Amino acid sequence: MNTIKDNILTLQARINQAREKYARTDHVLLLAVSKTKPVEAIIEAMEAGQHAFGENYVQEGTDKVQYFASHYPQSALEWHFIGPIQSNKTRPVAEHFSWVHTVDRAKIAQRLNDQRPESLPPLQVLIQVNTSSEVSKSGVNEHEIAALARQISTLPNLTLRGLMSIPENVSDYNSQLAAFQKLAALQKTLQAEYPSADTLSMGMTGDMEAAIEAGSTIVRIGTAIFGARNYSK
Ligand SMILES: *Cc1c(COP(=O)(O)O)cnc(C)c1O
Image (cartoon, rainbow, N blue to C red; front, top):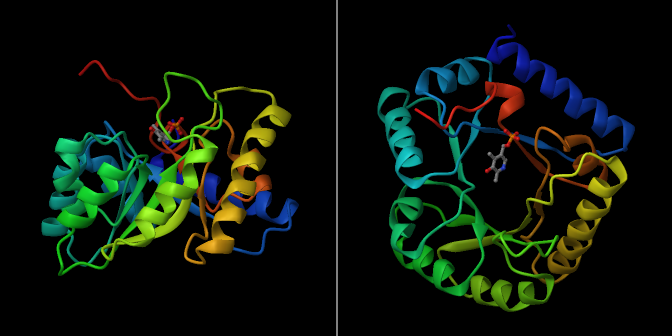
């Protein structure tokens, strides 16, 4: 079985190959999605040089942030919240994370702003966009981006950093690419108005190359680093 360290090195090589192939000169961040995985797995990833981690569940994610802050204070890990946010759960997210990828309504943005401790730098936020218009998925549609961006830009404790999406799970490369290019075009439009919105969070284990071709700056990878998740425990 591959170790977590092997997996991270393999992924870094895949990212760099894709960057070269698609003439990407900017950085593509590997975000290690550690949801459901124990702290031991995160420690192994950290020892392989991984510093950015993504979590989906407020309680689990907050526990991990606090664990590493107290046991590994020198490690300066960067924590990204990438799960759905309920409005009654915004406080721990505002208090413990550096990034939130899943802001999809004004109420959430306002609460994250109000609850962000003054001692911390602004929370880096992405607007989650639903590019596939599937009813079941969260995220704003493309016509709702502008209004939410305008609101976020007025909130002093948030910095608008760009867009995120979880496109429909398709295996055909050209369909993956088309969905990512759509999001990339929306992000370019947004960045023209808000220069800080330079980030595109898209691409997971199964569609990372297409995301990088389309301009992704953060790929969110769980399974290819930590193995399959077991939700039954
Ligand atoms: C779980 C999750 C990932 C990682 O998915 P893998 O297929 O395991 O790489 C990425 N992004 C989000 C939003 C997730 O919830």
